[in-house]
Length: 64
View: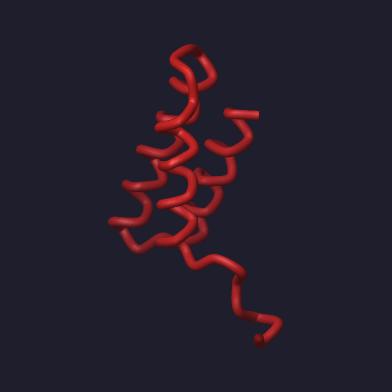
């Protein structure tokens, strides 16, 4: 694999984070993660991968 190729592309990362958000129990952590996930969806629609990945990372962090 090329060193510049990301381990997960943005679409795969979105699926993974969405699954984690869906499995999370209701509460403030899930609410925060979903806010970041929706922002990531907006960035993905705008083809802004760096912003999308930043929001996906924030969503993952919110669930921790």
